[in-house]
Amino acid sequence: MAEMKLSRRAEQMPYSAIRKLVPFADEAKKKGIHVFHLNIGQPDIKTPVEIFESIAGFQKDVLGYGPSGGLLDLRVAVVDYHRKLGFDIDIDNVWITTGGSEAIIFAMMTVADPGDEMIVFEPFYTNYNGFAVMSQLNLVPVTTRVEDGFHLPSKEIIEAKITDKTRAILINTPNNPTGTVFTEEEMFILNSLCKKHNLYLLSDEVYREFVYDGNVQTSALSLPEIKDRVIVMDSISKRFSACGARVGTIISHNKTIMDRLLKFGQARLCPPTLEQVGAIAAYKNIDKYVRPMIEEYEMRRNLLFKGLDTVQGVYAHKPEGAFYGILRLSVQDADKFCRWLLTDFSYKNKTLMLAPANGFYSSPDKGVSEVRIAYVLNSEDLKESIEVLGAALQSYKD
Picture 1 (tube, rainbow, N blue to C red):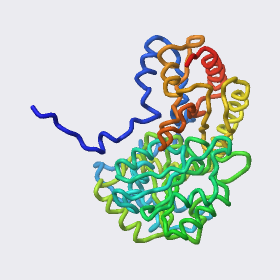
Picture 2 (picture 1 turned 60 degrees about the vertical axis):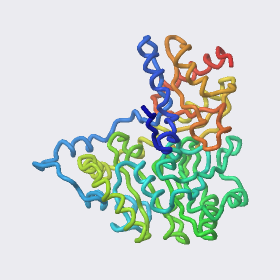
Picture 3 (picture 1 turned 30 degrees about the vertical axis):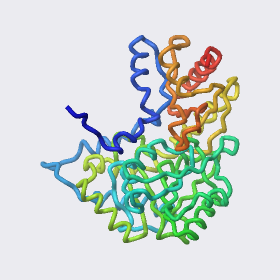
Picture 4 (picture 1 turned 30 degrees about the horizontal axis):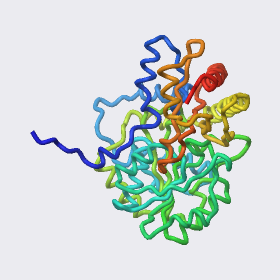
């Protein structure tokens, strides 16, 4: 019998750098080893109770299809949230998506054709690689360095990557996995490049509130010169510690873009209704939850990176936002090291699960000695994790 072939998309689709080591973690747990999960941005802070209460209070007899663009009340809540931040948007500028992931995929497929190019700054959110395969786009990486705090290189370096196939620049600020927050000057550089070369700016702003040391995020929505070329993708996952709800938003002032985006929304019918009901309640209570959460994460960041300064074999830049950081380790292959942590190592019957950073790059030779760490654990667990990492680096032999 002839061998059946699968699509190139299926073969090219990468495994998740965040989740691919889960089977090894599961085996370690079966041995009775406690695994500190620093590999995934799953907050441990409690989800607002209003989300659960509003879902439990859903009174309709039939859970039917909702509008393809999302519930009107949620779109209004998103508009109100942005207006409080000073952004001039209205109901026609907002669609609701099935998570931030769908927002990114829809945006990619709306602005670019198969074979087109999109500039992205690496390291970047690992799933951009998968979204690009699904959309049949080519990501063109511009590498940033830990020594520079993963901030943008010069305008000239970025501009050299632009070709006649370039359709957009994709950014994420505050950034996953680096925690970098782009400055106003950096955003102005991106503004000028998009204006000069007639490019779209796709801005992933899931971590908008997660900025520390008294600073604030500069949103792509604040760039009036390219107002019609900006698409903002967002989600309630991190803001409300509700990753499993799968409720995202996509925002643009460009009416043609919004019309075309809705076609994709209609094809998948509608986003989940009950989770949208919960999201409405969350946005109504945002002031109660967000500030204490940000203070907690800033405290964790300070504790973690102060501790990492004492660990031999770790080079890190203290992140400015989000709840991640990239660590350069004294190992030749971080992929092997991360697997070894789960298969062959424990310290006081404990070990770590980290995300190898090579999966957060598009360039095949980058990030080989780096890992992403997510400081989503409580303070005591973070302290123990630092101790475990130090012991692991002392024991590990390449």
